[in-house]
Image (cartoon, rainbow, N blue to C red; front, side, top):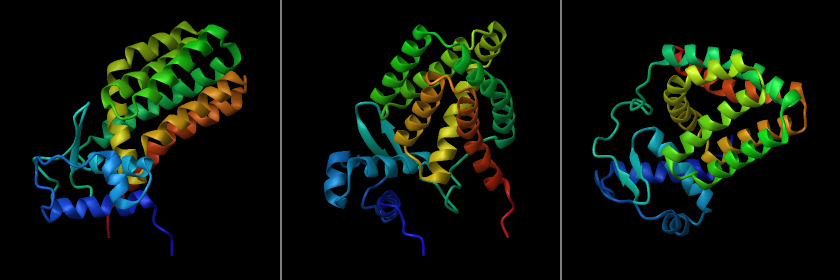
Amino acid sequence: MQTRKGSEIVFEQIKRQIETEQFAPGAKLPTVVELAESFEVGRSTVREALSALKAMGWITIRHGGGSFVSAQLPTGEEGAGLAFNTELLQEVLEVRKFIEVGCATLAAKRRTEQNLAELRATLEEMAASLDREEESDRADIRFHLLIAEASHNSLFGSMMESMTERMRESMKESRRLWFFAERASTEQLLQEHKDIYAAIEAGDEQLAADRMMHHLQKVENVIGRLRQPTE
């Protein structure tokens, strides 16, 4: 038997407390620190569980205000609260793979010290905004646009700029899907971006391409699993 992660156990317990109305719709949840002490786990474990609960529609997280039980709770099977257009998201991801893998390859070859400094600064922004969704999304998009810029290919840059709005929506939905299906955390997502940066900094074109492909392929794999008919 596979041992369940601590975040999965915390996720199930909070979800059960919501279902039994120990936390009623609209109620504010205890802080991350209080939940960590209550469940005797680390704060990152609690944040991971909260990310999954948010992705599935059980809670909302307000910037600077804490976590609240959703006024309208999900119904039906687990994941029924996930509303998304998988076909559109699939199309955006397919285009992103072809463009961004090329961007990462050329960035590893052509990046300048200024490019690296801008990418590092954006990673710092991402790290500082792990619990602030809007700021984190903006930093995420900026990171990908900066890689296109570091490719020093004006056409790649133009194509990425033209996709900014689509990327914003696709990234938001991609995160929801990934957090839901993989019980992933914002820390894990940040680490993937750091790994891509490290390959670009090292000038390793193949590794940069592989890590970018891996980063984009994961959500595509989730979509494929969710699309499979249930028996």
